[in-house]
Image (cartoon, rainbow, N blue to C red):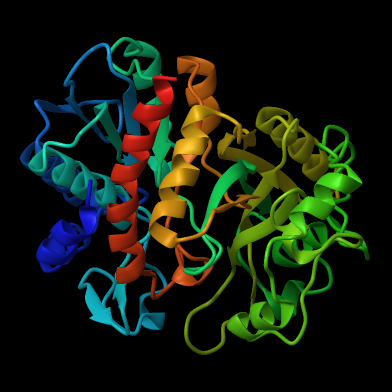
Amino acid sequence: MQPLPYIEKNKDRFISELFELLRIPSVSADSKYKADVLKTAEAVKEKIKTAGADTVEICPTAGYPIVYGEKIIDPSLPTVLVYGHYDVQPADPINLWTSPPFEPVLKDGNIYARGACDDKGQMYMHVKAFEFMMQTNSLPCNIKFMIEGEEEIGSDNLGIFVANNKEKLKADIILISDTGIIANDIPSLTVGLRGLSYLEVEVTGPNRDLHSGLYGGAVANPINVLCEMIAGMKDENNHITIPGFYDDVEVLSTEERAEMAKAPFSLDEYKKALDLSDINGEKGYSTNERISIRPTLDVNGIWGGYTGEGAKTVIASKAYAKISMRLVPNQISDKMTKLFTAYFEKAAPPSVKVKVTPHHGGEAVVTPSNSVAYKAASMAMEKTFGKKPIPFRSGGSIPIVAMFKSELGLDSVLMGFGLDSDAIHSPNEHFGVFNYLKGIETIPYFYQYFAELSKK
């Protein structure tokens, strides 16, 4: 198996085809893009079919459809189920992009576009790796694709689809590239993900916006109240003050934390990349620990009152915020949502009314690093990067990984190729051409080693 000559011959086409997908604004969170999301599903279907799948179909759900495809070469061989998503985050704020978010450009070795890394570029690596194996008659395993269109809005319908299609999705391992590596010269495999609870809060004061001169000082300002309530959610050590918040938190041993600390990390470079003079976080933990093994609470958006040009002196009737909690193993998302809701309702002064609306959530997960599939992924990365990958825990969340385990009984291999600097969910998201092509090169070796190790 030699992927490099095939990749070198076809790399311009591989990039051009990815550009085609990136031009479609498949923003699942905004209903005005519904036609584009559906168009992307059809495009992904055609790409998988052209690559060599025998069966490819658009599977309807109550929301956006799931693209399913398969190539079964021998039922007695191992089967790999590839998961990815074709929907993307909103591009806002548009004015901070240096090029239009849905007009991909190649600059400084990077592909700039919304979805370039998360997850169209990483998902499409698998399609092109599959194409290579089909064109060179080197596919050693059965392969199934399950590419969804609602990952960025919580994958609400994926669980239903999985529960209703267990036979169709029968496999030996799930392979996912929606994570990253430490650096292009430091390959790594993700072995842990944080869970998530995402909520929206609403604080209501008077029954209408009020003149701030006539009513200021006599009527509670919902925006002020909301800010005070949010500020009270953390103490001076950045510990979260919600009662019971830390009760179920997994505590790693000194030895485990020492092993984590071996991963290469430069605090100076970290601060420089973010243009920060100092870092901030929970007292008693390193930066890497804060973003991987510790839970968090963050305000993702806050609004209310007048925000237009010029001045309008009002006390707003309502104030809003979107808040997310990243959770660690043993913290159950439903329980944490209830704890937050109880805290927020109790913390509100009698001068306002509050409402908490849960959006979506998911559980933290730690994947095995001693399995055949993990060993195959490690060998594949060592083959193409020239060094053994480091296992590490990511601060991000892929809630469906825990769901796959509970519904299908399958572990996942998280073999991503993105970088922290790729600005996913942010303006100017990008994906390195090196990373895109390295993924296409590495994935076939995973299949080769997984098939070989599965025989032993």
